[in-house]
Amino acid sequence: MKWICFLLILLLVTSCKKQEVIETHDVLKTSDTLPEPTKTKPIAEIPRKYSNERFKDVTVESVGENKFRVKGKGQIFEASFSWVIEDGHNELQKGFQMTDAGAPEWGNFDFTIEASKKEENSTLTLILFEASAKDGSRQYELPIALD
Image 1 (cartoon, rainbow, N blue to C red):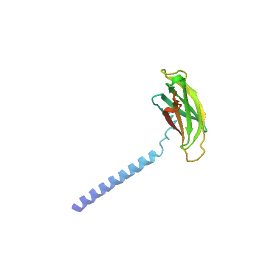
Image 2: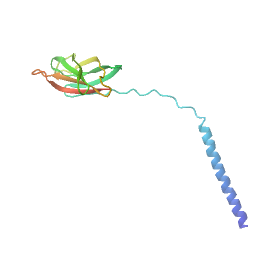
Image 3: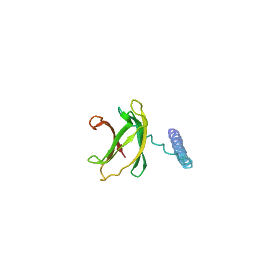
Image 4: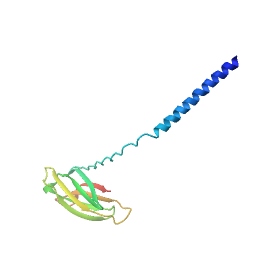
């Protein structure tokens, strides 16, 4: 009698395990028929803003191959500031720009520059600065890496 009870329990346990395996297998089959997730648009990258004592909210945006749009605000004496593009060793380009208001107001500026690397492994850096009224030296430099 003990053997019969043992066999019945064993048969019951093995049939339950088989049922669990079958159910798990069925779940896997149904998951194969789920619809594909909808494709979402990538989130637009928020431009990084650069600031110091004389410049604020400065952004640099790539607008083409080797072309960059520079926007921001400056609190500059007589509304004129200078810029230079360096590769770590040499000055590749330089120039000046104007804001739409002089200090003590914060004037807006928006300009486009074009710069290309001379050496493949170099990093281009745009430096905005105010030239000293006394000796023309750079003051309040704001370096920005051009990616």
